[in-house]
Length: 347
Image (cartoon, rainbow, N blue to C red; front, side):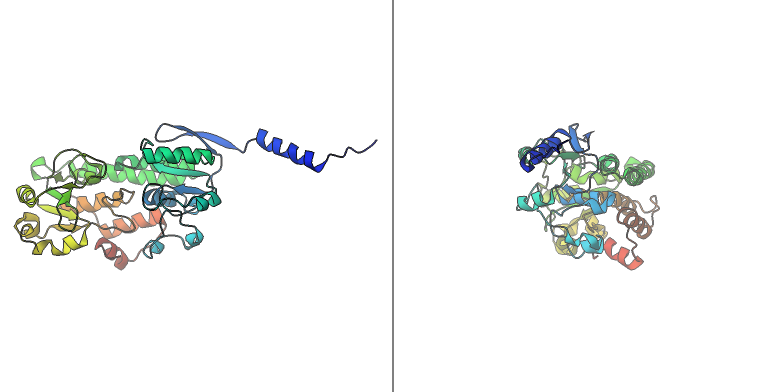
């Protein structure tokens, strides 16, 4: 019997057909924007659209983070696994100079994770582009702190780390429940009046019903600037006269220049919070604990703010609370001195 000889060109064609007919192992997921998305069954390379998403990916599955949206700082490398130092920087999908597309395609991510609902024109353009490159996009919810436990669970299942995601989610739900239970015991008449100062002069702030300032209410404070968010960016500009009218008992800020010099500003000298030395600088390691950008660090920020506002009711050792968070989320053991530096805003 003769031997059938198949020409190399025909054999190659048959292999291509087989690859096209037999797809790689995949699964369908419903993301947090309600979209059905087909993703690889096993995900190894993940890219986040912005830094807060990357940090959440890192907390759930650190070695699956395939790229950074911005170059990590020396402070970041105090937390990040040094094995990630070879990961490329691709830029942000939602700002800055944009994404280096050649680098992104070279990475060939299994999935890109976006934050939000996908309605903005910028995100819509990226969805079309990534679809052309056959890169699936999954959306997560990260505006409100109450979203974060479900997001951590979702990422755990997506990235093949369900127990890890569930563990972090349980921590978040426990924090929300414990703080809510404690501040519920504080009479409304005793809730402290809080002003969130932004800008070097402190004359930008956020209204009561803005996700940028939601920790004030969650921590039991009363935001003196009422109203709703007029535009997603926030940063309502107010006058010095309004500040005097508000006369807050506590001022919180992420602006170190304002924190250090408010006491020297004539208008601010008349405000109760300045007179009673109740200006709080928000910790910001590795991201701001309060806002800009909203991130999972707000779990710590909520506890920090509640304890700062009501030390007689909220019995937390913030050194131990901070150490526990960093150990749980980042696998990092911090010294007391390091924790105090972080709490003082000088990591």
